[in-house]
Image 1 (spheres, rainbow, N blue to C red):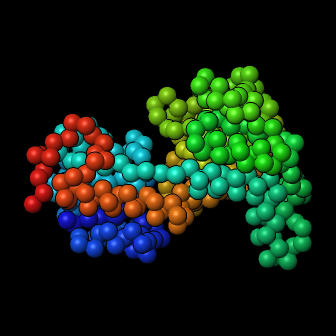
Image 2 (image 1 turned 90 degrees about the vertical axis):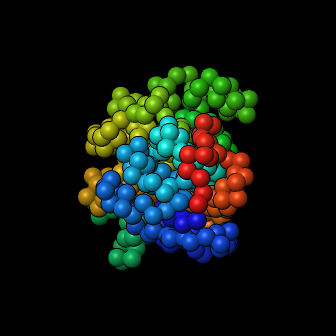
Image 3 (image 1 turned 30 degrees about the horizontal axis):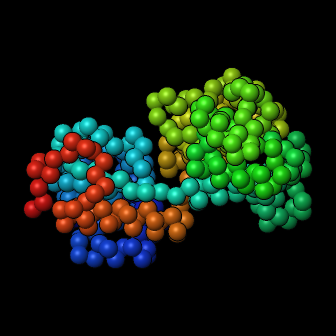
Length: 334
């Protein structure tokens, strides 16, 4: 099969041990992203199989209709609305889902929390310029960092990642306050944490508030300007889940008003993030380039399953097909 691996910005996949699974196939690794429908259609038209790295490229109906050779989309991790499943099914294109792990994104979340709380990046950057113990040359921003012990960690979403982050908060002596569905709150209480009395209370009481919700129609834009305005002036808002959980421009405006005082972000509505993004010009924002799952162990896990699904599909025995109405007769392997 002719296989394309999309959006491998670091050209990391050829160095993975699991890459050997594709040794009997013709593989092309694309290191840059193309957004236009026409350009994408031209680039992807020759391929039988596409390997998607999370949601870096969206495959809508218009694009899929222009890919006559495509037989399988192999997803690293779970689908998250970036592939038109109904269109793929109608066109006879199989979609294979993989598996994921909460460890790397949870650790990245905690890294951002600690780095932002102690102003590590700004201190380290200024040290290279000869500035000792200087968080900022702006006197208003040259304040002290803070320890986490004794402070309140708010978590919205108590799934696998949220549970790990809650455990890190407990280990650091924080009071953990959880909001989410009734079942999530009940689970958090059973685990020895406190459920927030209300959504408003979560935003009002948290010194650090971390988002851990999946993105779907009910959660898109779920964090409002009113929510953010309830936060403390010294509070830190953390989002390593999905940028679209926050209403458009609400966070930028809230930071401008000083509530919350700080943000640590790993996800953006448009990725890769352009250098002209307003977020990059806000000095109280710590921004990383969507590194949540970008580390070697996670890549080996994600791509081993994605590659094995293609190998199994080529052999006519893939058990991970996501679209239940898919018919192998529509686009048989040549």
